[in-house]
Image (cartoon, rainbow, N blue to C red; front, top):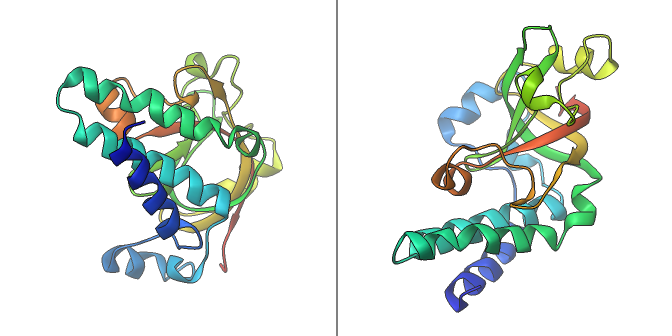
Length: 198
């Protein structure tokens, strides 16, 4: 990790730990009808460290002088994420905002939650990609019933686990390096999701 990236990461951790999920005033007004504003909901330290690692990767990517240098941001980010890998296997009560509520062709639940600025955790949205991952939500499960009662934009607490991955430490679904760094979407196996102060 470069000195500038390391410095950015340390600063990010200091700012993010104990911070709150940020929503713009427009987003706040749309969420307030169904849930308390996110500025009143502190996020767990593990989630703050996760987001700080992503921000560090973004900073290193932006600072890269060429495509080769930019490419190094991804393994650097993976190393930071893996430093907390044990926690990523048992996520408890992270805070986010529902971004997608849908289903695949078999009627299984598809869920995406925004946990930070252009950072999402989500299930796969099709059977083929989900083979071996088991992230799609079974219609007969209590989790499906809880998730289907939510609304897009609603603030929620969720639990579950990320899927280990060699490239990103935890599996990320973007097709390009730029997408992976700028707008990462991490595949997640949800075990629970609950509206916050509904």
